[in-house]
Amino acid sequence: MEIEDLLNPDNVLAGFRASSKKQALQALSRHLAEKVGVDCRDAFDGLMERERLGSTGVGHGVAIPHARLKGLDRIVGLFAQLAEPIPFDSVDDQPVDLIFMLLVPEEAGADHLKALAKVSRLLRDDRMCEKLRATHKAPALFAMLSQPASNAA
Image 1 (cartoon, rainbow, N blue to C red):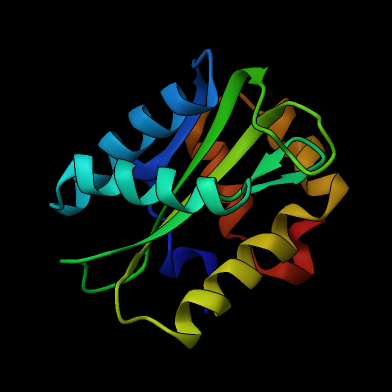
Image 2: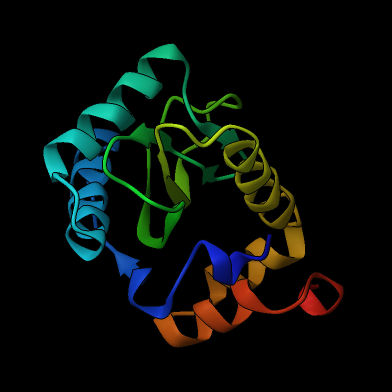
């Protein structure tokens, strides 16, 4: 599984503005749900339900919100680089400025875990995150995210 399997250029946002975790998840889930033809309220509710289990803020300014959703036929992702960091109840109590959201078919088992692992590995790379934070154009962000892992850093 590659990042391009999860993400397309239309779902990469640069300089995204949100004032809170809830506002970010609402706006980003609406954007992604509209692109893939699922109900935006269902997407938002699924993401919030997952957040109630524990924050998807994984630390170092990164969050990977995800939810299972009826009506999807494949895993879809969205990447947002935030204009300003927001509180996200992250494991390290640091605000988040890089969000990689995943919506997953309800029956996706191992593929869901593979997608999370792929995104997590990519965003654990400090140099990659520095580059993502320093870039302010969506096409360049997509290019960085989708390059082969051996060239990513």
